[in-house]
Image: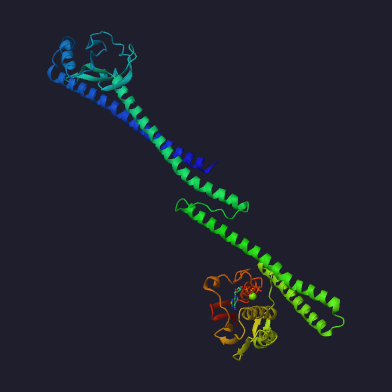
Amino acid sequence: MGIQKRLVGSYFVVICLTVLILEIFLIVSVRYYYFHNVERILMNQAELSASFFQQYFSDEDLEKQSDRLLKGFANNSDAQVQIINPSGRLLQDSTGSGDDSMSKYIGVQSAIHGQPATWKGKDPSTQEAILAVSYPLQAKDIIVGEVRFITSLTETINTVNQIAVLLISVGILVIVIVTILGLVISWTITRSIKDLKLAADQMTEGDFSIRVQKRYRDELGTLADTLNMMASRIAKSEQLKNDFISSVSHELRTPLTSIKGWIITLKSNGTDNRPLLHDGLDIIESESDRLTRMVDELLDFSKLDNGRMAIHLAPVQLSRLLDYTIRQLAPRAARQGISLELQVDEPLPTIQADENRLKQVLINLIDNSIKFTAPSGRIFVHAYTAPRKVVIAIEDTGSGIPEEDLGNVMQKFYKGNQYASGSGLGLSISDQIVKLHHGVLRITSEVGKGTIVQIDLPV
Ligand SMILES: Nc1ncnc2c1ncn2[C@@H]1O[C@H](COP(=O)(O)OP(=O)(O)OP(=O)(O)O)[C@@H](O)[C@H]1O
Ligand SMILES: [Mg+2]
């Protein structure tokens, strides 16, 4: 069942029940009030008549006085009045008929025994609904007869019925209004949900350009925002992935082209030209290294991404590691006319780390610095001890990273310049490795001045 049906259905049931209970209560109350009122009026009149009789006529014979009495009684009442003698015989009837077909009903009779009584039922002859009230007539504590007031209930029943019809109409009106309101409200809700579902379906199909219209500022509106944000993130990461694939293919092709070119050259005239052969092989070697490094990086990355990278902790002498790494990268920096300096503030404590991974981080970071620093620039690597940690800071006088990129450079595949060489994985991998060591990698940078990358490693 759809949400709209469920919402409106439950609304409908609740309202119907409420209206029904209220209607029953109101109609029963109205009925009781009206009938009770009629009964009270009749009883009052009967009581009044009986006391009138007791005061002024009790000395005389009931049967003889009955005619006059009846006139007196009937004068102040619209009801039918009957006077009955103690044996139950009808003496007088204000309608003039001598018919006392009611006498056989219990209750109508009981006044003869001293108790006022009421009886509700159908007139035996006309089948009309009537109410009869009997009251004993007493003369000096002796019951000498009974006065009976009878009234038709038809009018009362009609009034009650009219009120009931009115109440039921109002009830139905309320149900109709509330149902329409419920339909409108649930429509506004389901409309938003339908929008969301439609958009989600499109996204499942792979279309992330779709955006959900935010109709209201409620939970569904927030959900629409979230869905839109999700779509734009996925679209962005799709874009990154595509960029990555094209950049990786490009990166792989460059060394391969160079290797292939050199092999062709060496094949045709490498045997008799020793210096050429030497140069060629050197280049082939370094290009192969580059390829290997790239493939390694990709493998690392997929391991990191799956959480399968394990680090093997062992005591590491940081100063030795730094020395070694700097020496390895110095020739490259020198080739580009960049000075690469190392300062270690001894004593550095021995830390627990994975030496190879840590070296990979240092190479990544210094590689970035070399890559993004112009000739005659300077790279300064500084290692020192701080409370409970060792800090390695790599500072360069390179291009710097624009503020808007700074938050993204650690994301996988993110490159400041899409056409620059590299896969955009270096910083992402380094950050992950530092995190595996429970350390922190921080970048501060200013465009045109340079970049400082700082690694904090816990001791
Ligand atoms: N020292 C730096 N100076 C200026 N920009 C930098 C520096 N280090 C990183 N960046 C910026 O951050 C981006 C991401 O760096 P990252 O090392 O992750 O990727 P990459 O160097 O482009 O590729 P890879 O390291 O995989 O070869 C770089 O493309 C560059 O724009
Ligand atoms: Mg890099």
